[in-house]
Amino acid sequence: MKITEFLKHNYRHFNAAALIDAAEGYKTHLDNGGKMMVTLAGAMSTAELGISLAEMIRQDKVQIISCTGANLEEDVFNLVAHDYYERVPNYRELTPDQEQELLGRHMNRVTDTCIPEMEAMRRIEDVILEEWMKADQAGERYFPHEFFYKILLSGKLDASFQIDPKNSWLLEAAKKNLPIIVPGWEDSTLGNMYAGHVISGDVKNVHTVRSGIEYMTFLAEWYTVNATEESTVGFFQIGGGIAGDFPICVVPMLHQDLQRNNVPLWGYFCQISDSTTSYGSYSGAVPNEKITWGKLGINTPKYIIESDATIVAPLVFAIVLDQ
Image (tube, rainbow, N blue to C red; front, side, top):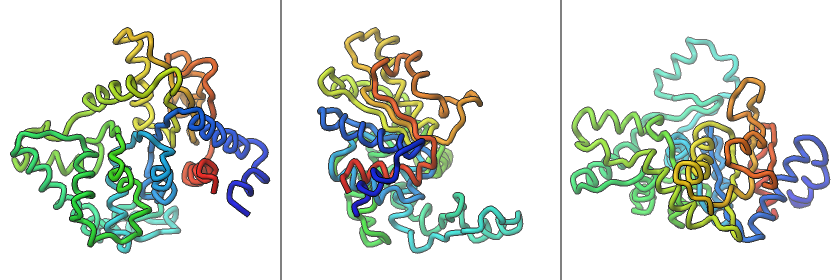
């Protein structure tokens, strides 16, 4: 039995039914000529979402991505250092002393998965620092994802691949030159490393890596070109946080700050979230709240799946891919 057949037979109520509805809405949006933005919060790359997301990119089910700096870099960390990762199934039971022991071995823990500093982070730092310095000395400036595209497409890392490269979503995005928005990139391991290299003088111009405001101006131009009444842009949000909060605001910014009244609202919205509305968090807000901010309309298809994104997102993608 295909995954889609199994899901449609068994997922009939509650969050399970919301998953089916959201996936079918995603397909309908694309079938009607729409485009889709996917946003990645949390540690989805370390959760190896690339296995399903890369296929979505290959099959043109995603036209633009917004992600945290962590998700950007952690896909590449996994690509070149997967064999050195360690899983800690009993992570809830670790004592402070055991956590200190992991630190002593340079194993940085993300829930049940430890990322090896030397094999992953430092290996990538050496390669990307070369690109930072090269651009800096030439007076050139690039976005964070563009530096990754350079090193992935250069072939410099090919010999270091430790997973099937078809499971790297960023490599697939690089091949298609997919637009990526990385708000708050400074809040990432490589962002910290970049700051260190600016302080030490290896990079002279702090603006060699382009900023979040420039990402917003780029997104405003991209959205203006790609969002039309006949072909709207949808918004598929995995988790909450800045990866979703930042790009969704481009629409009210265009309307309210630039007074452009001919820009369509987002044409589809779905969020996978386990955040709670009653705590006042934007990440947990139900979609209708976004109507009051000028992001979604009354008739925009809206879905919220209150569940674990590491479980739900690959299932939604399976339905979209007709697997």
